[in-house]
Image (tube, rainbow, N blue to C red; front, side):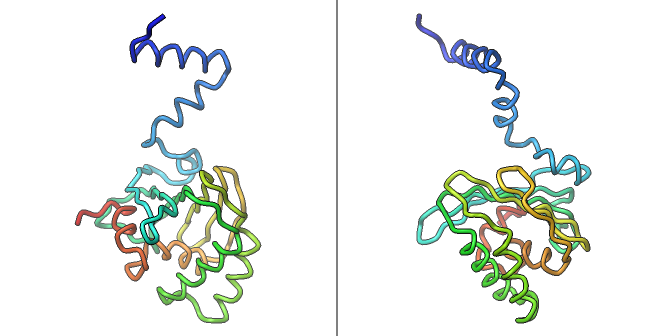
Length: 189
């Protein structure tokens, strides 16, 4: 039996329905639909942008940013946001924490003493990730950040300064990845 593209898709969806996984397949096919955590916590959220971090040409991760403001008016210290990173490689959680602290220092976030405490905190939170895994941060200004791994809750941090510094890694004007910042926020060149 030869199937045309539309018929093939119908057969795949029928098979997924019979297996009970069609809603999951359909949910994952809409990249513009906010994750449920975003819907539950950020009123009128929309995907601002997406970008890719590369190191010497190698893809490290893809990211996307959700918030409820426009790109030109976005302020990462003031606006609630969901930042999701989908890893293209395997990394140790301790390496992710260490690199996060280095980036925070580069943007001038926190004191040396604060960063030492933040290093301990982040090392205890971040798991090892494999290619295809996601780590996400749901930032609430003035309150803190909730971390997620593959969409599941990982940790809650009630430290507004750490939360702001963490988001600043990608969203501060002094970030080491200005092109990715521009893409995430959805700014025009």
